[in-house]
Image (tube, rainbow, N blue to C red; front, side, top):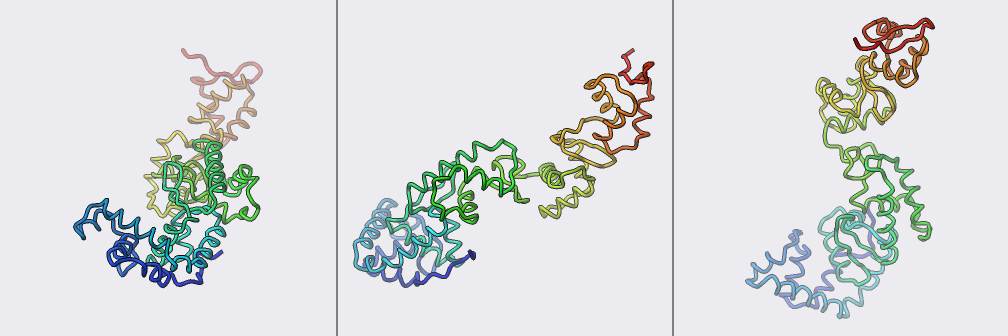
Length: 348
């Protein structure tokens, strides 16, 4: 589906017809309140009240009375095909859609968007749910469907780990598990993505991976978070120079090589596994320099011959075999027994 839709009615003409049943004062208040005139900025109750020298509450009364007049009028009844078309369009977008999303799809022109918003306000078949801690401003034409989507998005959020990242396809598959009983006509990727975007607690990072919005893996705020996402996307140890380059490429952030290296050293999420090569701690790499890695291997496995130690260290570090041998030969840290197995040297 394209980003915009060609609507078959003329919004400004429809508005003109609807407002024709109002007094001059009522018409002016509605025009200013919803940005339906030459000025597209919507005015607050307070600012309209100041203009007319009346209270905020009086402006609200005029607004409500004017909308009630419109809804009782013959002009409103005549525009039923307009509202039918708008309802069908909202339903085609998924039945429950964020306010920004539906208006963006209809037009990029703010003036036209204002008129469409006004139509949804005055037509009872459209229900607005105000933004809250979980969801954005949204409109729906089916209360039961809306409730199911709200509940399913909350369940999906609760199923995610705090810093877990999920590919979009996998997240959509998980989401589908919670909405099995919803009509198949809605089970299209573009609608499912639109429903996911309703949530304020689930979102995706610049690399297209989804997770909890509050996670630094999703709402990356600094060089360390950017570096984590870059290395994770790379999938294997990577040089800090390449990390800096990728940060600039993916996030459009200037990443100095020295600064990037400095941040990687400080953060426990990263492990230095070779000359300038960094991996993620979550991948299971042991921390520390080569002698520390050897110690941890012996502590875990008991005394081992040289070839076994070299084999295990090379799974943890991108170093030359000779570097491992040199460390093993240091009697301050290791000793070799009669079976040519290495032990951790006892502290003197």
